[in-house]
Image (cartoon, rainbow, N blue to C red; front, top):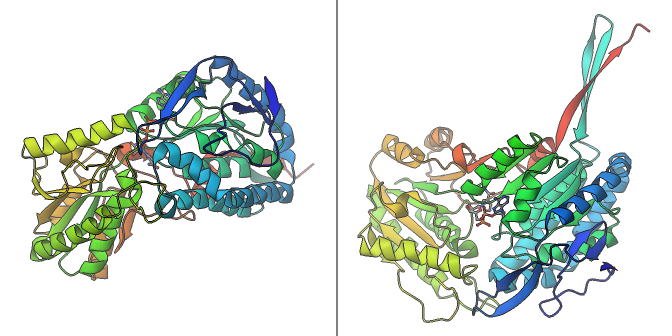
Length: 495
Ligand code: NAD
């Protein structure tokens, strides 16, 4: 049954969005299959009625997008800009309910992550709206009576497949540049955190997006696979794990060679030299580990500290994480900074790493490692020191608040250790010596580097990983390029 999305936003934890949003209307899935989600703060059932979009649903969204595309491509730059800006304002206006819709399945407290994440999405729409009339093509000087101009053409029907750890922030990073450059966009949120995305329907309509331009299909990996292998979807921008990213690239190649952007996992190093500002280094490293309870792709989870300050750093890092641990609790309570992990399977996975790390003597526990006495999927910040490079806690992305802390002697040794991984998303270097900072920043195999900071990002500059951490870039001009292709037009000026 199709229902018109109301222009007023009425969704909340008590009134969940439980339909697909296709062609500017909420519709039931043709699959009659549903997904189940629980609240990680206590394991209680949130819903067992989240629709699982099937091939017919994906096809319906693609047809609607194809119908919308010619009009959306031709709409004036200022009109398109105003729609994106209005949408950004609506996200901001509805920050509280959108954050709540995420919190009930992700467990992210409003103050430390929930509001930030909605704000990131809103800012992404504003930033990309600003590009619309500035993302220009080129004119090549004439040669032998010919001139060439290039236009940045949209790719057509595009899609975003997003993970659970930043359910709305990742939407901003993908949908905003896709729509700004004249593409239609189909969003597939994570099956673990579907509600903020599923609730966007009324805001999409109220902002003025024409039917079919911006659609939302809830579902799991099967829905994602239908999108990645669809013959008439021209681009997938994916954020998630490396194994899934590889499958998506394969499906894209085997179907229609759709364009792919992959934002994947990380095991990011922070390198702390003797001559750094210790307080600053420990603060950034502790914040990086605690943010979103460690469920952040670019969290600094391998911390290397030069031997002269190792003990001092370890003491400070520990103290700061102890302060964070005091704020573990119910994400609905004010003052909570660290909520639970997203679900039972992630909780068991992270605890498995911690338990094996302890029982297998993979390192010495500096802090954490204990089970909390709370119901729900809570994990303490946990740091292992003196971990050997062949230990699983050293080399695997754990995706919880768990890090390793090792000492080093020389710059050469630490750069080698930092780079000895297939990950290459983020790295940080802490030192007061600008030459050393720039040298190490350039030596890191990493898509992003912080100097005297780590685990941060800006909408204004490329975001993404090298090696197996990803392919392509989001944010900045790079995001617009990733959703367009240059078309060269050659003009014979002699006739
Ligand atoms: P995931 O790979 O399990 O799932 C991500 C999305 O892919 C979900 O929407 C899921 O339904 C979909 N999916 C699953 N199987 C699929 C398939 N076969 N075909 C198409 N789609 C499929 O990842 P996750 O567990 O949700 O997220 C955690 C991972 O995401 C971590 O590795 C983390 O580092 C990474 N991540 C990376 C970034 C970044 O920007 N680099 C940001 C956030 C998270």
